Image (cartoon, rainbow, N blue to C red):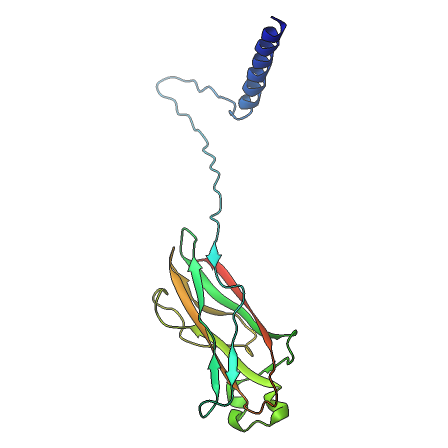
Length: 198
């Protein structure tokens, strides 16, 4: 019997707490009075949550340079697939593309026209690169996407384009580099993207 009374009291207390808390949600009422006709104004206050931006992209991408193939060597890298998982369109901007430490070489990014790449000596081949990224093609990107290359030497962000929801756009890298490498080396770069609502 005591257990039953405790359950009933617990339930009543819970209802009382819920009723007290729900009173705070309701705004105070007002009364309008007059003759003929009267008007009353009700303020409407909305609460709007932001949409969550969700994008899938690779964590790392590798490239290779083979100075032994082709007239100017071979630069090989996979595409970077960017998938817009957001419910609305987003813009994709390259904020920066910069050389990073951690490899056996740390390149200095330079302008493509600043060197005669095929004739660089050993020291300059190990020092300079012109690395760039751009939209691979029109697939996935909305009309007006940029066909320009964002070179690592560029200090300002570059808008690549807009991706609609559930759409994938691809980027690819391009590079100019020397050919005089005496042993196998590694080098690192970081690319930083900005994803914003379109």
